[in-house]
Amino acid sequence: QYVNISFLNDCISKCRFIRSSGLCEGIAYSKEKKACLIAVNGNNDDEVLLNGGYHFLTLHNCSKDREVERAHNDPPELHAFPLLDEICLVEFYKPLFVSGWSVIAEIRNTTSVQWCLLNCAAAMYANKCSAIYFIDGNCVLLERMHYPRIYFPRQSASVFAELLFCEASIG
Image 1: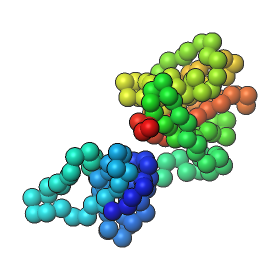
Image 2: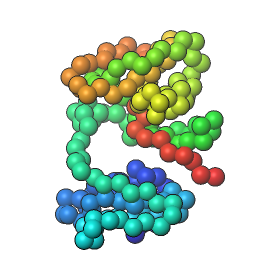
Image 3: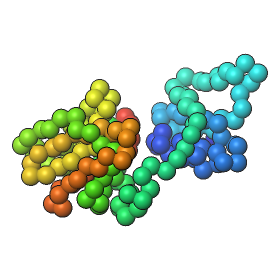
């Protein structure tokens, strides 16, 4: 068991790190308790017994996502969205050609990148928004495509950012 784990993504990262040695088949995570449990092979009935407040996930396949394209990006940043009571991990892209994105919607007269990110976070589950393209007060909401070989060109004066994950903030 790991304690003081603030985000589900951190718990998943612990599992990914030891997965190659066969020591992690999944995780049980409680945001309220900030606890991460590493799961190995289950009992004879393949049951996972959890206390209240825990969520269980299994990791089937882990692979690097567009590693070359993302190589020169700065480390992801945490962004708080009090209106949604969420915190999101956001990665800002440096390349002018990014692959694997499709336009969901365009919002004109957007005042800031943060407002654009807020709109994407709000549409994350209903509309699968996972990235934004912001230029000249226009906010383009994007979803991931299954065919990453199609490139999305962007202008040098623009901002392209991916919301890697969002979680409810506590306190």
